[in-house]
Image (tube, rainbow, N blue to C red; front, side, top):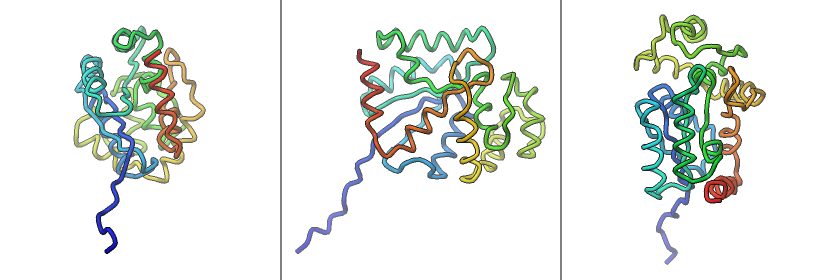
Length: 210
């Protein structure tokens, strides 16, 4: 008799430590839309604030269950003290000067910079929700955006497969220098997660183990 056992699906396990509710909800939405290569099993962890990121990252990395662990966070406004502290702690954890550059996916001044690219070319100049609320209302209808759970849900409902393609093109041309307002390296994550060739995982880990 032929073997009727189902074939086991071997997927690459990736973990992303998300700074907070917005970051978690956004990446979860993209996961739901199935815009990335199906060979990646992407787990999300909500750190509940940027101060918790280094410990969450270290715990997950040392757990060894994932092939790669990343961080998705804001730079906030200059002088980016908390963001720079996250980078320093990740570098010290790995004992590699540029480890953070390999694993941190950032939005400057905030990750709403990336989310807004689904609808507009406009670059955000402030991380303040009160400053960005009019833009969010314009494209999602959410009044007086403060990042409440109900407001985040409505914003995420306005993210589609179609405008993912628009975001993808807009993010690609952003500067990837985290000291520049209106910058992001999210395009790097998109390139990796859409890629059918998973050798980039080995390349990242080699940089962390130098």
